[in-house]
Amino acid sequence: MATENRVVTYMGPKKLEIQNVEFPKLVGPKGRKCEHGVILKIVVTNICGSDQHIYRGRFPVPQGMVLGHEMTGEVIEVGRDVEFIKKGDLCSVPFNVSCGRCRNCMERHTDVCMNVNDEIDCGAYGFNLGGWQGGQADYMMVPYADWNLLKFPDKDRAMAKIKDLAFLSDILPTGFHGCVAAGATWGSSVYIAGAGPVGRAAAAGARLLGASCIVVGDTDKQRLEVVKKAGYQTVDLASSTPLPDQIEAIYGKREVDCGVDCVGFEAHGHGPGAEDDPAAVLNGLFEVVRAGGGMGIPGIYTAGDSEAKNETIRKGAYQLDFGKAWIKSPSLVAGQAPIKKYNRQLMEAILWDRMPYLGEVMNVEVVPLDKAVDAYRLFDEGSPKKYIIDPHNSLKQAG
Ligand SMILES: NC(=O)c1ccc[n+]([C@@H]2O[C@H](COP(=O)([O-])OP(=O)(O)OC[C@H]3O[C@@H](n4cnc5c(N)ncnc54)[C@H](O)[C@@H]3O)[C@@H](O)[C@H]2O)c1
Ligand SMILES: [Zn+2]
Ligand SMILES: [Zn+2]
Image (cartoon, rainbow, N blue to C red; front, side, top):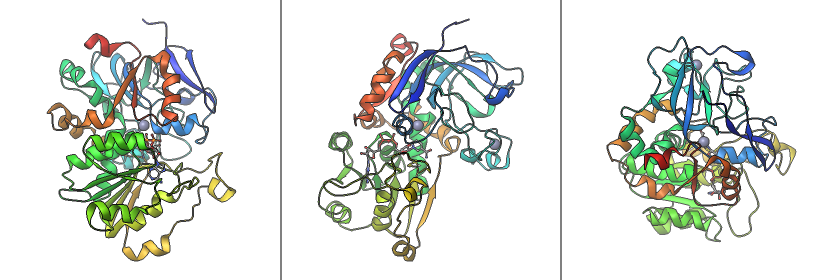
C-alpha cells in the first residue's frame, strides 16, 4: 500500500502548503464509519473558483483543511457495504457529498442532502460543509460510493478524453445547470456573467442546449479573448458602455431570454474603475433578462466575507433592485448545483463527441501536485486557464 498521501492544505489567506498526511481510511468527519465508502487514487483534481474564495480568505474555513472538490479517480479499496462499485473502476466524484437516502436526495436535490452535515443541509468536500476531507491529494475517501460515484463505462476510452471528463465533477454540470435553471433551450438567447471556468463551461452548456446568441461578460480581457476565439459573443464590463447597450449592439435587443451568474459575491461593479459590488451581477441580470425570463445563479454568495465593505454586506445582505425587477415576473434558481442531475448525460455527450468544442473554451493546463500552489497564485491573478492537477502523472502515462 502507498505510504505517501500528499494534500493541498489551507493555512490562512494566500497560504497553502503541500503536506504529507495519513493514508485515508473508511472513516468520515467526527469518526463517522463509512463502510459504504471507497478509497480513490486520484487521477485528476481541478482547482476551482470556489477554492479561490477560500484561498483569498473570503470564504471562511478552518486552518489545516485539505482543499479540493473536483476529483476523478480510480477505486483502490472498497468498504464492506459497497455492492456495485469495484476495485479498478475509474469514476467521477460529484463535488456535493450526499447520502442517497434522505428526502432531498430522493428528489434529486443532492445539493441539499440532509444527512452529511450537522450544521446545515448541504455537504461538499474541501469546504467548511460537513468536514469532508478535500481531494487535492494523492488519495481520498468517498462515502456512499454506490450512490455518489459516476463510473466511466470504458477506462481506455475515458482516459483518451480525461481532460474533458475531468469537468464532470463540478464546472460542466454547474454551468449547464445554470443554463437549464435559466430556461435555456434551442434558440434561446443567453447572457452569462463571468468568463472564468464556470462561465466558460456555461457557454459550452448553452451551446449543447441549442441556444442561439450566447453572450459572455467579464472585466478581464484575457479571459474574454479565450471565449471570443472559441466562437461566443463577449461584452466588456470594464467599458463605459452600459451592459444593455452592449447587448443591444450584438443581439439587436436590450434583453435576452436567460441570464446566468457565474461570478458570485466577489463581483466587480460595472464601468471603468468600478469598485467591488456583490450585487452588480444580480442587478445586471434583473436588467437584461426579459420579462418572464429565467436566471440561474451558480455563483457563490456567502455570509462572512472578511473583505466586505461594511457589516451589512459582510452578513450577505446586498442592495438588490428587487423593486424594479419584481414587475418582470423573474424566476431564479440559486445554490450549489446538483451534479448528479446532469453528470451522466454530459459524460455521454463527451464520450460520443457531441462537445468537441469544450476543450478550446476551457483552456486547460495540467500541473503536477507539487506545482499546485503556483497554479492557485496564477489563477488568482486572473489566468485564463483551467488548472488540472495530475498527482500521479496519470495523464502523461496515458499518452
Ligand atoms: N453553485 C455551484 O455549485 C458552484 C460550483 C462551482 C463554482 N461555483 C462558483 O461559480 C463562480 C465562478 O467560478 P469560476 O471558477 O469561474 O471563478 P472565477 O473567479 O475564475 O471567475 C469569475 C469571473 O467573474 C468575473 N467578474 C467579476 N465581476 C463581474 C461582473 N460584474 N460581471 C461579469 N463578470 C465578472 C471575474 O473577472 C472572473 O473572471 C464562483 O463564485 C464559484 O465559487 C459555484
Ligand atoms: Zn468547483
Ligand atoms: Zn441525502
